[in-house]
Image (cartoon, rainbow, N blue to C red; front, side, top):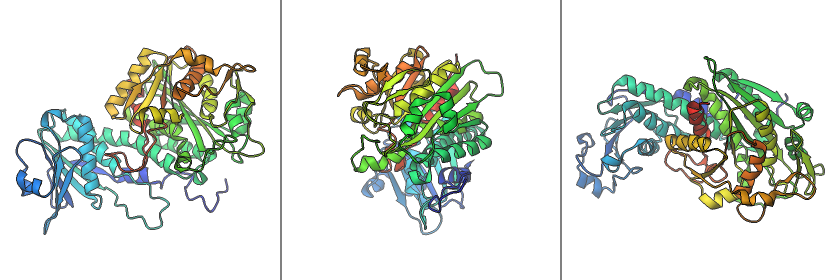
Length: 502
């Protein structure tokens, strides 16, 4: 394929920052050494202050240090590494999420240093789990999307030395390995969602998936426009009508080494750029973020890069439904009726409610594939943002087991989910006078009516829906969530796949 001179993202995806930077990180288990450029020591709200810092508690307080998790104080030295007091809060309250956060704070405080060491006392969590949380926090906090900067100033983290009280080195190394695999899922999702839409089309997404599949052990099948017409994917084709770029359905397949007894389907919304179509969005900061409207597909693809190395035992199939949504003389229009895969007719009442239209085809295909359960993920509704803000995503489910699966995964990864009711009283809002269903509900409960639309196509298959419209990005660094795309959901999907059984 001939690439535009303005398209700087290579098709093989090898030089994007997340994967490159993550592969540079060497995690070792040892005490601080002279080669370290900065050394951090955890300081609790009570108890002794590490003598290595050279300051007692009173002196740290005078210098402005607060021992809460997320607070740090850098103490320069005339020779040798910088010393860093790292707040650890109350000893009895220290858990995996707090370890992840304090490691992120330390990594940010030492952002100009490539070789750092962290000494952790009082982590009563198990060495492997503690190491995994610490490495995830540091690695994800140091993420930066810098591929389009002519003179990037970002310093890549090349070595992280960990010393955890009472921990064996092998447990730390095992935890670190798991952390880097999990972080991979998130940084791939971040790289994709941060990439400008002119540099990442639906066709590009397919090429990237092929390259990542060859590298990380999963199969990829690409469906172009002709193939989608043959399949009858009227939702994806309808949304694509206004675009000069071809759509792509990207089907991912992970097969474990041993025969799988369960089959999980993952569906991701991949709107590469969402103008709103004929229902054009206003030109405001939210419109600028619509390059991230493929965050669901990015999360699914990110999760797939980690499944083999995480030892996922289920078969997992993913569908990425990719197109942009643009206004033009050929755009689909309000009042049009689209025909989904499987024959359901859908009246279009708003062209900016397009994500559910592309996903309905995938849900139908997942059911045809005989999956045992489905999780879909999408930057779907502004109502999700209004309801729960930018830190927590709503989850809807038609099955208690699926709700529990994703909520448990959320607890492990510290990507907060909150279950909301799939209130069937609102289903009538989607009724249509001329088709089987319409793509828009009433004025209120927009996240719920969107979920009810998707539930129609999920049918009786156990299903959960994650609406990540609010959590897809953060305006500024927040613990281990770097400014920009957060990659929210990639680690949740990975953990859910690891735990999934029939």
